[in-house]
Length: 158
Image 1 (cartoon, one colour):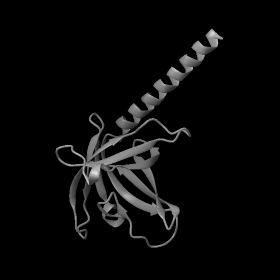
Image 2 (image 1 turned 180 degrees about the vertical axis):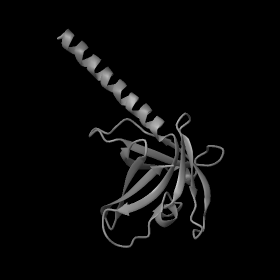
Image 3 (image 1 turned 60 degrees about the vertical axis):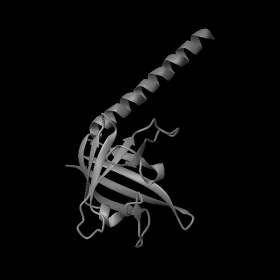
């Protein structure tokens, strides 16, 4: 019985180490500049989507994002000249341990230039659907008319 407990403990610690290595690897892959090239929805229609209490999805399309993993911060730049609010914004991010089903999340929190929270300390959780050296996909589920509504954001490394 004692040997079984020791074996289970070793397996548990090894799996935690693997998860941490996966997160570190993901942050290294994330490092650099990305372009948010496409935003899609899980159903057809025309929707007025405001992302992160900041700007419309149309304004975010073509935005550039820079991730700095060593301090979990970054910036994104809204580039659309037709949008009211353009320019750079700061954020803090993290990739927490995966959910029970093994899916990873991406946590995003707007901050100001002095690294203080904005939007009443509000943050956002997206599902990190895909990440490799060239592409990344986030999916954010919100509620629309009382039903789940999935917003998918596709990035390409610059």
